[in-house]
Image (tube, rainbow, N blue to C red):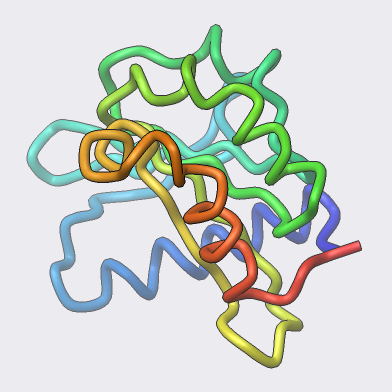
Amino acid sequence: MLQQQQMIEWTKLYIQSKDAFLKEIQNLSQNEEWHLIANLKNGTRRLYLAQEHLNTEILLPKLGTEPVFVIVNNSKQSFNELVDHWNELKTFPKLCIVFVNPDSDLEKKWLIYPYTHDRISDPQSLKLGLKTLFETVRETK
């Protein structure tokens, strides 16, 4: 399981690799509220928060209209928090939660935009569908 500082470093590499082709990022910064901020050349920004486990008590008050990416370990605790707080999380169109395990011999990450996923999925099979995504990456313990 990644500790918070390791998650921040992983996130930085993830951001840089995603931007290698498009080159949208002007610079990366941080402040007390966000672990990383990608300041884009078009004047907008993407906000990144690294949590060992998804913590909606900390996350929800921070959410607004800017794109937010939350990086968490692919743990049962994070998965349960996602499911338990789905109705709140699905109301933020620009929220993305990235579940990671760099040591996984399967996929290394899976991600979800709750707002979008909620619009295309069947409410009765939501938990099963999320569990299927969760299982594509080895669980962190």
